Amino acid sequence: MNFDDTVIYPFDQQFLSVLRHLKIEKNRTSLVSPPGWGLEGMDAGEIDFGDKLGVCIQSDFDNALSNCRSAFFSGHDTALDEDKFLLPKICKAITEGKKTICAVKLAREQFEFLSMLAKIVGGKFEYINDCFKYVGLSSQTLKSKDIAYKKILTPVITVMGIMQGVGKLDIQLSLRSHLSSLGYKPLLVASRSYA
Image 1 (tube, rainbow, N blue to C red):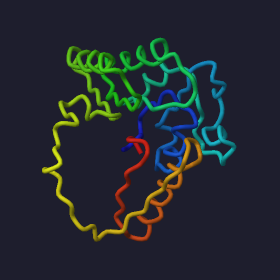
Image 2: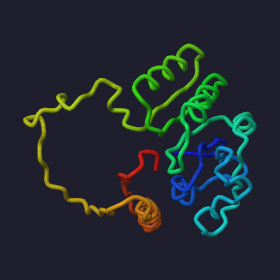
Image 3: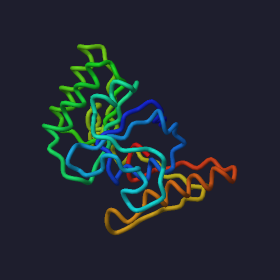
Image 4: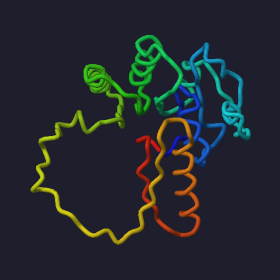
């Protein structure tokens, strides 16, 4: 996924691992955190006491949106009133014709509303979090007789942990980057669908 010319909202530590491993144009990606999170003006790399990344976090979503072609709404660890701070911003991005990608878990009604809004205004809306639930698939779709077992001849590396926030995604992205640099073509099934 290419995040150039994109506003990423709400930005906090959860998206930081993805940001560290992206090859982004620093002056073409806007990181926006809601007012009150205390991140405005900080370099993105500093929020977990890491190295600076050269991308400053801002809190003015409207200004950032006006200067970008797309908006990415990421998952977040910090508490946020989604009805007040998230859904109106998703609606604004759609109505302004921005390519809008949402990786935040939405209720079915919210997903249907945003999809309908995009159709009405001719906007682009993608939902990449548990989207299989909204395209007509159910657990009854696959029956056990439909599943075939095959011998896997490809090495598989699994990164697991017993809790959130211990750096699993960072390790997964580092492994993918390292294996790619060695000439391999790794497939990443990450703990976050947008990685």
